[in-house]
Image (cartoon, rainbow, N blue to C red; front, side, top):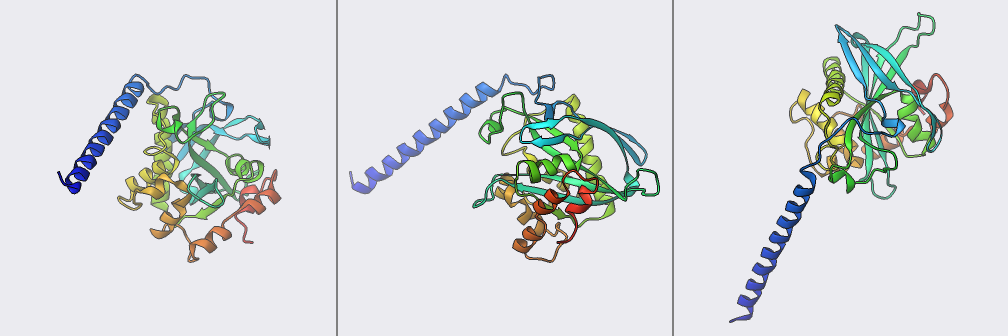
Amino acid sequence: MSRASRFARSAVRIAIVAVLVGALVLAVTAAVLAPMKPRNDRVWVPEHARMPLATFDGHRVGIENVRNFRHLSPGRFVAAYDDRTYDLDRLESVWFVLVPFGTTWRGPAHSFVTFGFRGDSTVPGGRARDYVAISIEARREPGETYGAFAGLLNHFEILYVVGDEHDLIGQRAVITGDEVELYPIRTTPGKMRQMFVSLLERANRLRERPEFYNTLTSNCTSNLVDHVNAITPHKVPYGLKTILPGYADEVANAVGLIDTKLPLADARRRYRINERARAAWGRDDFSAAIRAER
């Protein structure tokens, strides 16, 4: 038998072994995961203890359990949830929040969206604008920490956290010190409204039909892409950069979603809000201050 033939046979054997090992791993994984079912009745960490509930009444939306924690230091906070009402006719902006965890490699990250409503400053205590953020997260139990591998194994349920910007943005930009980029999104009022409603409707459905979080197929960014593409089919392509959320701004910029003419590197610097967030921490004008031009 020639050397080439022996090499070919060895390659075939290796390929067969690799396929069999892969099949065995898939079979064992499926056997382990099959009996598991997502649940909402577990004991959760305080940050994930309550699920939001949206009630629609014409152009008004009432949301129960809007998270509004007052963060003191990493892991220390005063827990609070509010019930708030928003007027869809006053919805005027949507923003994309990106929190890359790495400094040399942007892959690992968290992303979410936040919506701006024209307020009524003529009402006592009223503000010129109100903002509410929606963050899609891996719901954790006490003692659990998020891990990408654990997120592949039905280890976490998925949760839509609806919260105040001072909580969801400020906690990351000020308390934990993660880099936070806040990008304005270019879209129409109608699509802005559809996106907000779509997110809240999914949050409602998860109360009745819980689902597992998955690092690859159902993470913070891939779910946002699903919502965008349901409104504008094929607007955002699926790929490695939605699995690695740190590059999601690159994808959003490429399809014209980020409202800027700046090159991406300049946009990242311009819309990085940590310095402004620290300066405005604890103030009532926090949301306005983090959007102020440098």
